[in-house]
Image 1: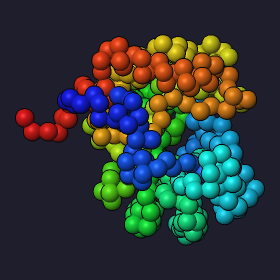
Image 2: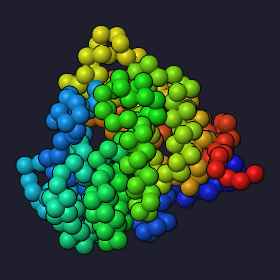
Image 3: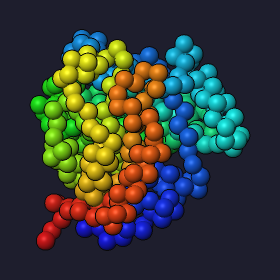
Image 4: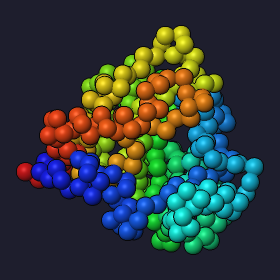
Length: 318
C-alpha cells in the first residue's frame, strides 16, 4: 500500500497527474496536437461489426481538419497552440480518431514518421484497440518507440464482458489483454482508457474494473464519465430511458475510490471528460471541469486519501 500522500505536491494533487509526469520528465508541459488520418474501425467497416461503439461519434477532436494532410494538420495545431502559449511549446502528435493502427503497416509507418519531422513534436500518442495490434504492427511501434516517446492508448472501457457486448465494442476483454501484453513485452508506454457510468454498470462493477486495471500496472490511465453525444446509439438509448447517468457527486465518489485502488506510479492522464458542448446531450455537469476537478480534490482531502492508498499488488510475494 502507498504511504506517501504528498508525492505529487508539484501539482498540489493527491494523484499522479500528466502535468506532473511531463514536468518531471521533460521540464515543461506537452500540448496535444490532434491529428485525424481517416482511419475507421473493425466494428464500423463490417470486419467485426457495424455502427461502432454505442457512444462513439468518430472520436474527432475539436480542432482536427481531416481534409488536410498530416504535415498541414501538425502545422495548424502548432499555430493554434503556440498562439496561446508561445512559440517554444512542445507537442505530442496525438492520433486520436477511431482506430489508428487499423491500416497497412507501410501506410502507418509513413504517417507516424512524418510527425517526427517536426522539431517541436517531442512525443507521439496513438489511440487504438487491443485486437488491431498484429506482430507486424507491434514491431513497427517498437521501432517508433526507439525514436521518440511513444504512448499507445488502448480503449479498455470496462473489464465486464456483458458491458463490452452491450456497447458493441466487438473486441473481447481477452483480445484486449493480448494486445496490452504485446505492447508491454516491447516496453511501449501504454495508457488504458476507462469509462465510468456505462449502461447498467453498478459502482462495484466500476471498482472491479479499477482493481483489475491495477493488477496490469499500466503506465497511465484515462478516467472519464460516459458522455451522451448527439447522433449516437447511446443517445437513442438515453432518450428512451434505457441509460441512467451518474450524478456529479456519485462520479466524484467513484473516481476517488478508483484512484485509491490504482498504483501510485500510474499516471492519471485524464480524470474527467472533454465532450464537445455543441454535441453533448448529457451529463451537462461534465462541462464544468473546474467544478469536477475541485470536487475530486476536496473529497480526497476530506477523506485524507490518495492514489494507491488501497492498492495491493497481488503478484508480490508475501
